[in-house]
Amino acid sequence: MDVLEKAKILSNEGSYDSCGPKMCEVKVNSGLGGIYHAKAEHKTCRIFKTLMDNSCKFDCKYCQNSSSCKNSSRKAAYEPEELAKIFMHLNKNLAVEGLFLSSGVSGNPDKTTEKMLEAVKILRYREKFKGYLHFKILPGTSYELIKQASELSTRMSINIETPNKSAMSELSTCKDYKIDILRRQSWISRFNLRSGQVTQLILNKNSTDSDILKMMDWEYKSLNLKRIYFSSFMPVRGTPLEKEKPESLNRQNHLYNIDFLRRGYGFELKEFKEVMKDGMLPDEDPKLALAKTNFQGAIDINEADYEELIRIPGIGPKTAGMILKSKREIKKYEQLKQFGASIHRAKPFIEVDGKRQKMITEF
Image (cartoon, rainbow, N blue to C red; front, side, top):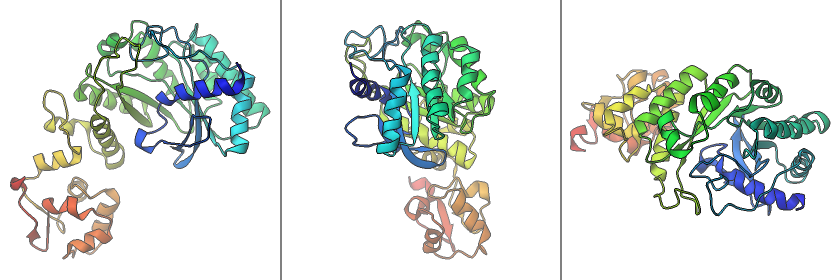
C-alpha cells in the first residue's frame, strides 16, 4: 500500500478525535481528507488530523477500529518517515500549519507511541517544523514516553471518554479508568505545554449530564485543563452498539454552552443543578433556563452589578463591562445593542428606563 492510500485511510479515521467543537471544525476539500480549519493557539489554522495506525487491541464497543468491530475498515499504519513526508507535503503545498496525531493501539501502547515520537522528531529536528502539534497519549503509555512527547508538543490529550469508572466498564473491558487514563492525565498536567492539556468525552445513555458536569468540574480544578470536548454517540455498523440510538446533538451543544459559561463567564457548574431533572439538563440554552428559574422579576439595567448582568441572556462579559463603564443612563434598548447585547434575548429579563417587555412569570 502506497503512502497516499495510507493517508486517505488514516486521516479519514482520525476524524473521530476532536480538535474543537464539531460546529467549529470545517473540513477542507483537499482530495485527501483529514484537513480542517480549526482553532489552535487562539487563531484559526489548517490542521491535519490522522492516526498513526488504525489497528487496535482495545474492545471499545462504539469504535470502528476496535477488536470488537465485525466490519472494521482496511488496516493501515504509517512508518515514521512516511508520516513526516506526507505532512511536509501538506505543509508546503496546502498551507497546513498543524498536526493532530493519534493512533489505535495495535499492540503495546509504548511501541505505538515510540513510532509516533519518531515521526514527530523527524518533523521537529530534521524538517525544522515549529508549528502546532497536538499529541494524543494512548491509555497505558509509560511516564518517560509521555515526558518525551511533552518536549515536542504544543498540546497533549488523552480521551477520558466517560465521566466515571462505571460508565467506562459499559464501553470497554480493556481500560483501567483510574490507572490507564486518569493517572496519565495527571502526568501530562506536570509538564509546561504551550497550549496545555485537553480531553474528550462521549455522550451516551450510560452517563447523565450531572455525571458529566461533576467530572468536568474535577478535571478543570484538579488538572488545570484548557478545554473539554464533547462528542455525541453515533452508532457504527459492525460494533456491539450499532443498534443503539444516536445521542442528541442538542445535548452536546448545551454542554458546550455550559463549558463556555464556566470558562468565559465564571459560572459555577453547581448552578446548573437547579434546572436539572433526573440528572439531565432541559433541552434549551442553559443560560436561558437559569434565568427563567432564578430571576424573580425584571432587572433594572442601570442598577445591576456585574454578576447580575452576565446572567442575563444576550449579555456577555464584554457587554457587561461596557455597561458598567457607561454613565449608567441607558434609556433605550438600542443603546444596549451598541454595547453588543442581543436585544431580543435580553428584553424579557430587563427593565430599561422603567419599561419592560413582559414579566418573567409570563414565560
